[in-house]
Length: 366
Image (cartoon, rainbow, N blue to C red):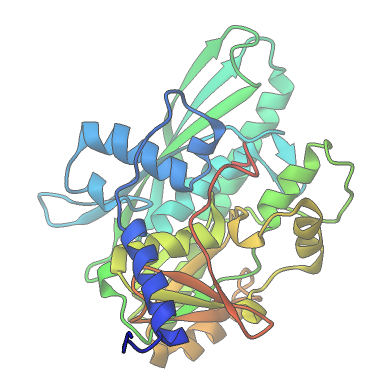
């Protein structure tokens, strides 16, 4: 007769979490033989592709940080951030913005959340034969407007034209350089248990705006993209909370994927309160109709920040005083256990694990 005591519910939960943690610690494996849309969604498939193909080929210390921008130290000692991105959104124009706005805002934001003050951008265009010059002028005008608003200059570029049918109108690639102020450092290894998780505003608007603008779903909703530069908002945060640990703009894969990247990098738990998430009712309604979790929907003018607990109230107050941060809020905290896990405290009093995005529910949204 066995004398082993039956496991308690807490012990069973610990075993499950241990198995999940071991599985999540595995390096992403690229099993696909061809590229799919999921490889561009910013989730698990993207991580596998980047790790198995690009990091493996180009491996170096700066690249392996896998940040929004590479932090580089010049021979003079000055530190720069360098970032690049490509934009293939369809349609080219949507409520609240266009591919031109995205091409500037996206790179500016990647530099800003890396702690840099964006200064210069390049712009490269791949244009399909037959694309209207008038429409190209409008897109370029949007980029000029966005650059002025962001406080950056577009100082170099390139243009290529491909045959009709070889592209979807126009694709744009931008690269950017920013200056990192002396003494400023943001990194996952600075994150500590007890820190607070902040969102700079409402989430999900960009992905839903683009999805509905395609007109395939016969859903009408007053949703506009949140595309905007966040560099001045970032500076506001860092002034109010100088001990800010880490930031990331929640674009492809949304807040859920960004938090998973952080949890994996710092090996701490990111705990999000569902009731605290700022989501506009029309965005939440559209997500519900489509069966999409808003935590995985892309944003183009919002960021996640981890700040010291004692600076959280001041940080939220400063963000809310900024014209682009009125809906900023604290949405969660960092805990020591379970390591590497993102969990959502639900409005029903329970909790669920938030994994990295699988698949691509919203292709071509940036």
